[in-house]
Image 1 (tube, helix red, strand yellow):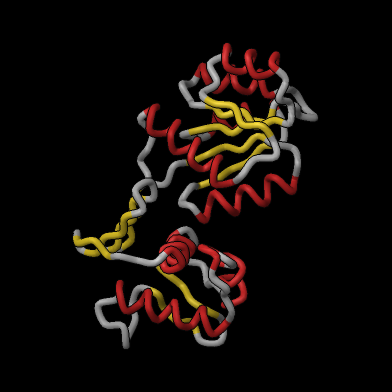
Image 2 (tube, helix red, strand yellow):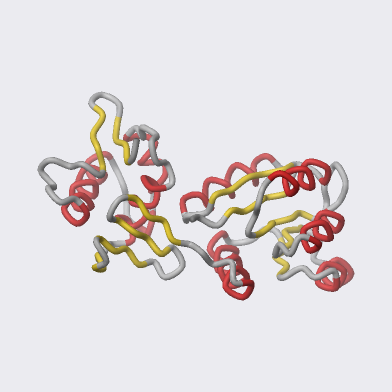
Length: 223
């Protein structure tokens, strides 16, 4: 199961960008733009972590944190407020970490994984058919044997697994893997990497059954 994160943030740009980034890294991500909606979603769903902005247009992050901690859910605060009072208040309430905006996505990712590990909520295995991915260790196995992928191949595989049953166009795939690991990605490069990935994970790369080609539309993994 993928870890499920609730992002409590009212900046739509941050919500869109962070949701896309976290999903590409193997996290199921939901969002709420204020205190009331966040509490309602916690009552309806199970989350492994909350990322909470302190300054919300409706309610405040401290109240959301209190509601989350009452349910035993880890919390990382995201806030432009880097004053000592906000930091101390958040940590005194039981927040597990505090990251000031603007933040580097990779740094936030590292902190998320550390908190999940400490809290025992690091169930980060994605499994489809005979392919299994441990997104914390970055290990991919097929029928129990490890497969070694490049950074771009690994990213591409995660995109497919996080969009199971969805037809992904080539343009969508290019957007998802753009400039990963400092490599320039164009349409020809994408063709090469899909072939390399198929060579490593398909039982018969000439007749792919895992990454299926949907003629005229793109590619799909799963039903």
